[in-house]
Image: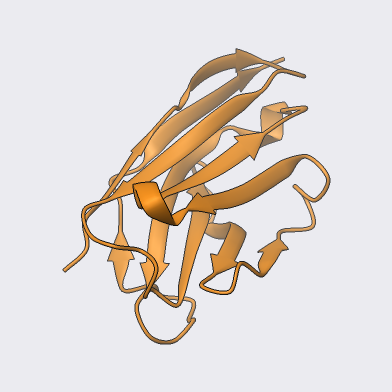
Length: 119
């Protein structure tokens, strides 16, 4: 069992930056992939960024060029650097992990951290 704890959310002005962290209770090196999802009120949850065990990454079109996902295996932590934030980035951000296979329904989820971007 892997427990995920997000941190780093908060209130920021449009154009600003935030860095989210996701600390795992166990080693992340064997996990197939780790991802950041977000869900805004009244909207469906969406994949924001994913990084695989081989460090391949993919991003939602809406965040490409602005967000960067990275991992530190020694610290069992995944990061999401968010730059040039927009009001439409406001959402609850969740860290998730796929154990063996990458799916749309990861095996492990964090509790979420709120990001609010004021315009």
